[in-house]
Image (cartoon, rainbow, N blue to C red; front, side, top):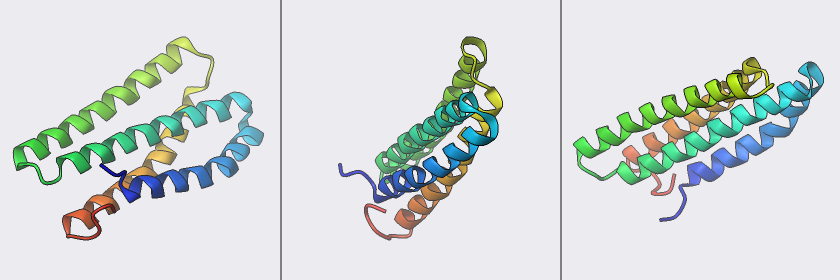
Length: 129
């Protein structure tokens, strides 16, 4: 299966935004906050790409399978985020506020790309959108 073009588009957007936002956080809040925000953004990108893969797999399957994979994807994302935040707070010196800001900053972008991709596929747009 070829990777969806939305995944490549998402990777490009996050790569383009990473350097300026990373430098801004670094100079504004310091290296620990920049590292924490980078970990959050990387986690957001990873769960979003996994979600896009799951949706690509589920499209064309029976409705019951599609809805089960959608619900499982939501639950999986919540478990991964909460686990990562808990580990960050309990096991590291990284600031959790920067992690959450980095995660949700990137996640909003990721969700917009994912929704666009699913919508285009649902209306019969590009097969790899």
